Image (cartoon, rainbow, N blue to C red; front, side):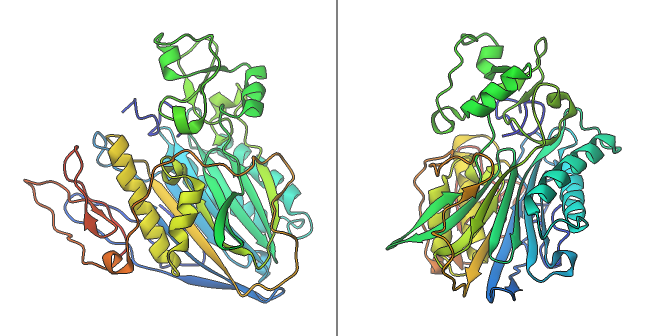
Amino acid sequence: MGCVHGRCCSRYPTSSDGDSKDFRQIGAGKSKHLLTQRSLETISIPSRNFKLLYSVLTQRGYYPDQPDKENEDSFVIKTRLQGNPDIHFFGVFDGHGQFGAQCSNFVKNRLVEILANDPTLYDDPITAYNSAFSATNSELHDSEIDDTMSGTTAITVLIVGDTLYVANVGDSRAVMAVKRRNRIVAEDLSSDQTPFRKDEYERVKKCGARVLSVDQVEGLKDPNVQSWGDEESDGGDPPRLWVQDGMYPGTAFTRSVGDSTAEKIGVIAEPEVSVVQLTHDHVFFVVASDGVFEFLSSQVVVDMAARYGDPRDACSAIAGESYKLWLENENRTDDITILIVHIKDLINSGMDGTAVANKSVASPRQGKGSADVSMHTESEMYQSIRTDVSDTQGWRLAVLCEEYKTSKGLLLLSVWC
C-alpha cells in the first residue's frame, strides 16, 4: 500500500537478477502489447532428494496520470548460494516513493549478495538474515539514491535443505499451501506489518509517530478515534504514520528498507522471521507483492493456484484476477508480482507443517480482500489474445485471455497465455 507520496494511495493520484535468464517483466508499451516469455525452472535439493518447480510474473501497474511510470516491483531468484545446492533464495520487493524503483532494485541486489557472503548463513540463517537486512538498509541510506521519502518492502524465502526461513519487512506476503485431509489450506508465512496490528501500532506510537487515516489528517474524521477496524473492511483509508507536525511521510506500513525520514518515527528494517520444516503435506508456496493481496485473500490465491499444475498458468490467472479487481475498485492498478514454487517429491516424517515463528507471526487470516473469484477453465486460458491497439478504442484489457470491459474505458492487461 505504500506511502501517500508514492504510487500507493488511491486517493493521491525491472525484475530478476537470479540464475533464470528467461524471466522478463511484462510491460505495456505505448503502441503495442508485449507478452512475457513463459519460463519454468526446476531446482534439486540433493540432501533431501526433492525438487522445487517455480515460475514468476511481474506486471507493471496501470497509472492513467503517469503512463510512463516504471514498475517499482522487482524480484530475485538466486540458486545455490555459496555454491551449496541445498541453499536457494526467492524474494519480491515492492518499491514506493519517488525513487521506489531504484530502492527496490538496490535492495534486491544487495540483500542476496550480503547473505551469499555471510559465513554463518548455513549454520545460523536467522542471524544472517537480520544482519543482511540491517546492512542493506545502511548501505541504501549511504548510497546515491535519495531514500528520505522512498524505500521498499521485502518478502523473502531462504531454503536450506528442507527448512524454509521467511523474512518479511512490510506488507507484501508469503503463503504456504498445505494439504489438510481433502482440501488445501492457506497458511500465512508472514504477517503484514501495518498499524492495523496492535503490536506494531504501539511500537511506532512510542517512537513518536502520529497514526491517522487520510480522512483524519484532513479533518473529515475525529483524529482521537484510534480504531480503524481491519484491513478487509477499512483498507481503502488505512491508518498511516505521520511526523508530529507535518503531512508526511504517510506510510501505511510500519517496516521497510530505506525511508530514512519514516525511520525517525519507528519504521524499521528489522525483519520478522518465521521458520517452517517442510513435509509431504506442503504443496507449494506463494511469494507476492501487496498488489496481489489488496483484493484477494490468501486462501483465494491458494485456491486459484491449486487449480493449475503449471505454476506459469497459476501466476497468469492470479495476476489477471488481481488486475481485474483493481480496475473494478479503483481507477488504477498497483504493480503486481507473484512467484509460485511447487514442492515436488518430498518424503519425510518432519513436523506437522506448522510454522515455528522466531518473531511473532499472526495466525492465518483471510487477507486484505474477500472478493469471490471467477474461475476459468484451461481452454479459456489458452484462447488467443488480441494484441492490436486502436487509437479510437484505446487499450484492450485481456484478463485470463478474455476481454473485460471496465467503466474507465478499455485497457490492456498483459498476461501469459
